[in-house]
Length: 292
Ligand SMILES: C[C@@](CO)(OP(=O)(O)O)[C@H](O)COP(=O)(O)OP(=O)(O)OC[C@H]1O[C@@H](n2ccc(N)nc2=O)[C@H](O)[C@@H]1O
Ligand SMILES: Nc1ncnc2c1ncn2[C@@H]1O[C@H](COP(=O)(O)OP(=O)(O)O)[C@@H](O)[C@H]1O
Image (cartoon, rainbow, N blue to C red; front, side, top):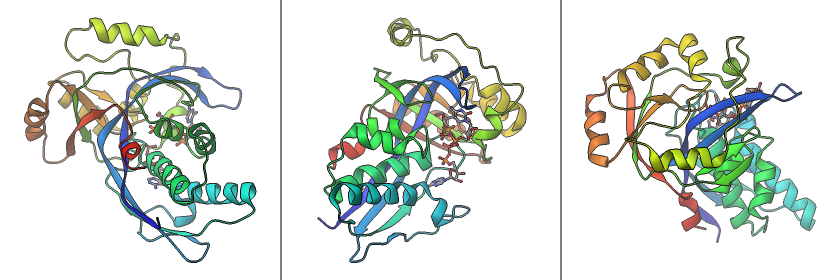
């Protein structure tokens, strides 16, 4: 096989996100549930006759050398060379970028995860899922989750993952039109960093016993993000009329769970025109698993 087209790189939502402390290196210890949804970017991979890794699509604001897709591909190419003594063929990578950057949807991480999984397949490199997850972690804390490939309870900086059941629901997601830099939220003096740890069964038993679709826990990054970025606060306030509206990750996007596609569609129709918004279904498994 020399190419794979329309490879999905889905968005994630953080159903809750607790900041429990800080590591000595300054990184924050988190607990979260990562939920994939059926809305995201899509990538095409075509092997080349030389050894170059080339992004063939322009991505405004992200030079090729900084792109997580290219960095992930180069890491894997070098690892395959180290293991086999042969540098694998280069690849042209095209991207249909749908997810907003700095949206808290993990777009860059998902693109990189899809790249690692697809190239592992095209190059017949034979790295295990765990090896790919470890390779992705230094590039971005969300990358291991996408490679893990199922709804997950995560700890550490997001790399300690356990599968967890979550609701079979739909989400409406609003893009408030601002890019939130993750570093600005984590470095805020107003961020609370002492939420007591929960255990996975706290989340699971909450889901079994809850009334309606109120999410478990909270997003500790939301207070800081809404203070720094008023459009995020505005989107949360608007969506709260329809359910438990909450920010994903470090923002900016805001989501709310609905029981059916029809209910999601009805909320979507009312979203003010100044915001981009969409509906998406919760995914239990990474859509790439069915392709590879
Ligand atoms: C917050 C989360 C939740 O899923 O997602 P996003 O909102 O970015 O999608 C992730 O933990 C985002 O992890 P990651 O993707 O590695 O964050 P980066 O943008 O590389 O982090 C930028 C900076 O934020 C700080 N940072 C990040 C993660 C963390 N657990 N503690 C931190 O203190 C660090 O200063 C880091 O240099
Ligand atoms: N392929 C990529 N897609 C999106 N962003 C990328 C990519 N490669 C690098 N980045 C950088 O990562 C930053 C965070 O992007 P993204 O992962 O989309 O948001 P978030 O971390 O909020 O979920 C971007 O602002 C951009 O500078």
